[in-house]
Length: 583
Image (cartoon, rainbow, N blue to C red; front, top):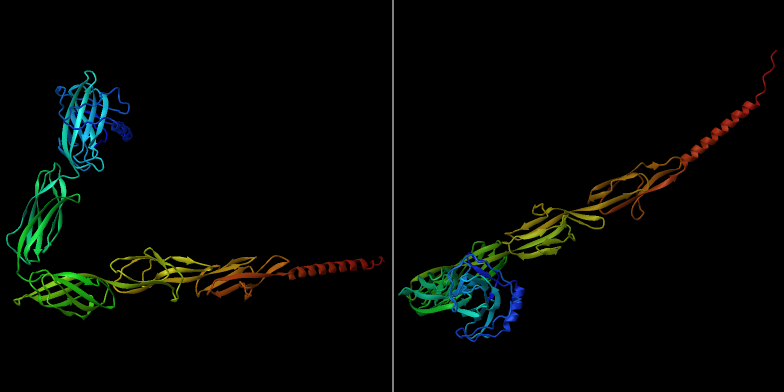
């Protein structure tokens, strides 16, 4: 055990060790100290020479009681609820309580493990102090908590107090049990006196919790020739109380049978009891379902299914036949026969079926048989099977052409998913909304079954092929060194794009005049500034312009003519003769 910190209780004095690191230092120091050989030995530790520098303490005296005489100390172990205890379990916290006979003291505490442990014990506290609570103070030391691997059984603690003023000692011993869980005892197992094959009975198991705290135990039963409704039960039993646990069982064998009852705490048997009972024969059966093969089918496929059943009675089952009832299946062969089945033996029948839909299905086998006297019996056996359906997922264009688009199915990415799947579990599917490449892109339109969201959960009853349908679009780009170009962008496959450059000529005098549209390879597309193209691939157009000097030449000629005419007119004016003189 080791101290786990400080707790101050009402009307008490509390001692604690500081921090886990200090405890570690103290443990190293304590291990080097002399150890007593037994609790009863009159032995005292070395007197403390000075204040222990590795210890820290705190105290508060809020009440006192009558002062005991020095010498023997009365020690109690108290749990967190303030109850005095003689047993502790698991990782319970508790503290040590005593009344101090001294005003000032040093404290020593040693622990002896249960017999057979090596080492036999160790110091918990060595020379802690001095503490000065005053004589008559109620002192709580702790809390303590079991260490990992604490040995089970009776532990013995011995406490020494040393009064430095009188150099006198007081000591006391406390014994307690430590278990990983409270012990339990089977007080009795009650069974009916007369038992018959094929009938149901109750077995009452009385279990007592001998510990000091409430605890949940597991009670389990085991016995050949019996079929229990439940082989184990968990039951919470108050401390010191007895609880009756009821098990229901059927007999499948006759004669003297043994049943073993075990009580477990934390998975370990703490008590067991074996009782015997006598079973009498009434009839063969009932028949219990054994193996069924296969338990997984595929929709639309014809398969043979084999049922095994066990004769749980004592008598032989004769004239055994079986018929199959299977909703959701087409019965190709629905009737079969088995040889006689001895008590405890296994019979087998085979049917041929074809699953017509997917999902979890119930196959019901009605087994008929007779006993030696000819009395007939009938048992219904049910088996749950799973019918898988085939799911195919793939991306295609609206025209039905395959696409290199990856779909996400669960955690898997694939261009085509085709697999037998469990129809009872929805499959998460995601289709990318847009996949873009070099001048081409695929835009999700819808699923072929009408679902428009690209993200969906698919749960099927029938096999299905579902297509993610994509619209194919191509990029049309048009460029021109002059003017403004319109019509570039993404176009659906097969649509028409109107490409236009405006104006068709720019400049004054020397003009740039649109000459033609040419394709990516330099081929002529159109000589019209407005061109309509059918988009069936990525298209790149470039406007080609030519330089036109005609306007500049015309202007130049006009200027020359104007200058020439002006010059002629001026020359004529200069050559005209002067007018005649007046008469």
